Image (cartoon, rainbow, N blue to C red; front, side, top):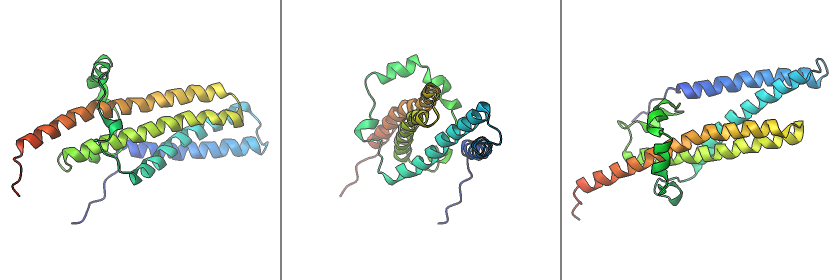
Length: 194
């Protein structure tokens, strides 16, 4: 059976476009600033800002591929629902906004072509990716050692971590519902006779 090449999602195309544009701007700004052609702090910080954006997005793509090397299952302890979560998600009104978030690879959540178990595992893998992204976001504070102004990197790291937290929340919100559907479908299926 030949697998059709999946068309990149809007989120994937957007990420790659932003990486390309910020890499170009960063290179130009750093070349002008560090060669002393145009020694402006505005130019330096424009380059640093573009570099930081590129770093965030590029490492997210790299680490998303690295985590594919690990066996991730929704049955693992880390991905189990905690007692407080249902109330928290109700308070955050996750049901109202979760459908508006961008999805990097929507085919992985397609109920027509994947089993509920595969989709539940995808939610676990996606959650892991976004936890790694939170760590990547926090790592940008180290750039303050190179360029100073640690507080700027701390603020951007905080907002990047908050951004990724929305995806963690969505995965943790959806997974218990999938687990309940999986459990119900197993109860309806008669046990096979050996």
